[in-house]
Length: 180
Image (tube, rainbow, N blue to C red; front, side, top):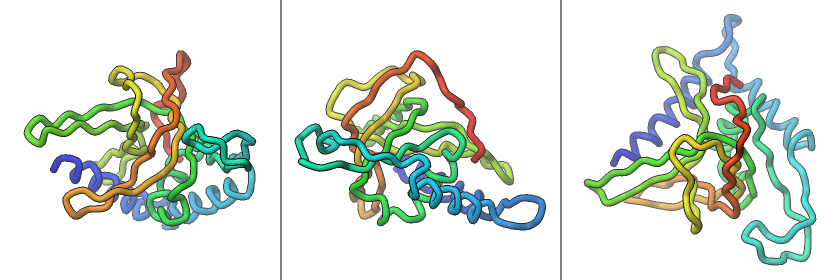
């Protein structure tokens, strides 16, 4: 149930990001999409000559989409709005590890997020739910998450998450608060 609140929060944040544009009245969503398109054209998406994201040999190269600090909010927004373009692709990003425990539902959800901009009294936490077969780090550790974006259904709702191939705790923290 509370997971739905998180999803609604992310969706509301996405709407607010688009609705609360700059002082000229333009939406910030258009600028973010343009920056992400630039990213897809090679400024931050890189090809690696390794195996498949799950560690098996694929015999080819796979694209890894790096989500960087300067475009973090815009790229996350683009992925949620255009999920079909990203499903099955490998994402790599850094953020704060979070764990939400819901004993009443016997459920635990894990996230790697950053603190995003707020508008109209709402603050955001852009990032993704993550799933991992290994051990999870401590709450609020700074991590690098690498994995494949997937969707899944729970209680009749579709959700996005990153199925991790690696989750690394880093000593040096990046920008916890991001605006673009």
